[in-house]
Image 1 (cartoon, rainbow, N blue to C red):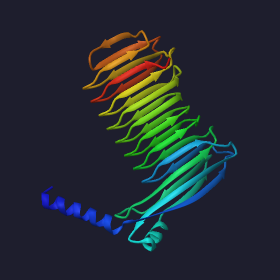
Image 2: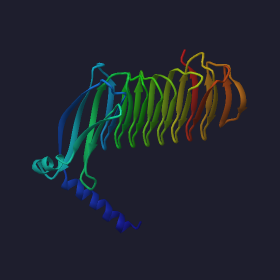
Image 3: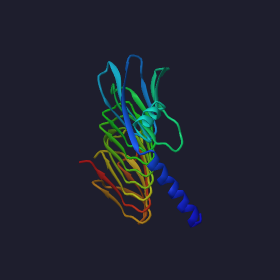
Image 4: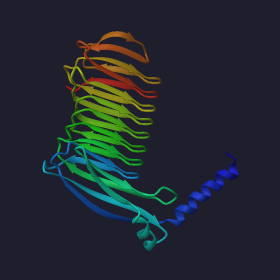
Length: 269
């Protein structure tokens, strides 16, 4: 791209920012009974999602919609284009924020409380996602946002770009994929049939495991160090940038890869 074209593009972006300088937010609420619901799905754009354990009787959501306009009246007209839909099908309760694409900035953030026994599928862009004390598994996808899980259980499938991933006191298998972000993962319980897979670029990885874990670990990095603490590993391969070893009998599969970052595997105790 030539400099004149680049300057023209930047000028256009700045002009749009000046045109739509007034931000308006509106809060809406949704609630639904939890009977017969085994999964909650939340989908949005340009907004965060936070889910925590709530009463077993129902599901509640506070939704903050956002739109920009030239002035308050223009923003009020624009925010009407951000709509929230609800759907119940085959035991799944879905909340979805819908909004136009284009030059104007729209977004919606969700704060949800649900029974700890329901599984989750959460999708957003340009927003952080956090999940607390949900015990039936979670699938999360975002871009340009951080992911945080605390006190969770069940299969965890986590994907982001340009964001860090933090998992604290999780019980069950974990799959993490990110770019340009670090991963800190604390696995409190891991069965022989469960696996841990972590992949990132330009970030370090810290993986904490139960003291009595039985797993085969395969750890790969470039431009970083690999260390294992608190175990007596039986090495099958040991080089500066690649370690394959058994912890205990080697039942579970643990695979970690990064570039431009260290990998540290350690016992939780």
